[in-house]
Image (cartoon, rainbow, N blue to C red; front, side, top):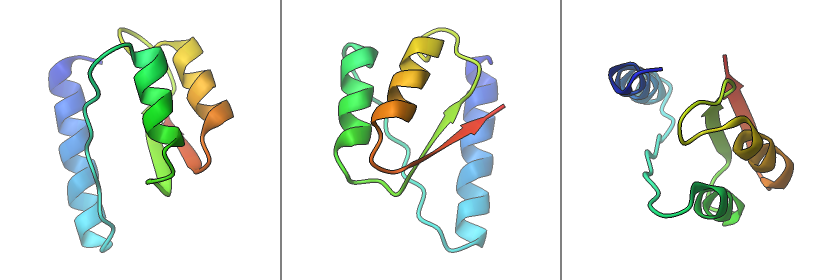
Length: 79
């Protein structure tokens, strides 16, 4: 997915969340994604993590599996 596609998806998700009175928090993580993203999800500050199912670029398949296996919250994978 291109950066424009990601931005469009995030904006759509924010609009839908607002309509349903659900707070959407967009968080950009710097550093090694394999460490930092998993650490952020495991922090316990989230009720739901939404990630793309098909990994490319920074969000690779092994990172997605690690998030799913280690998250204390629900994980929604989007196809």
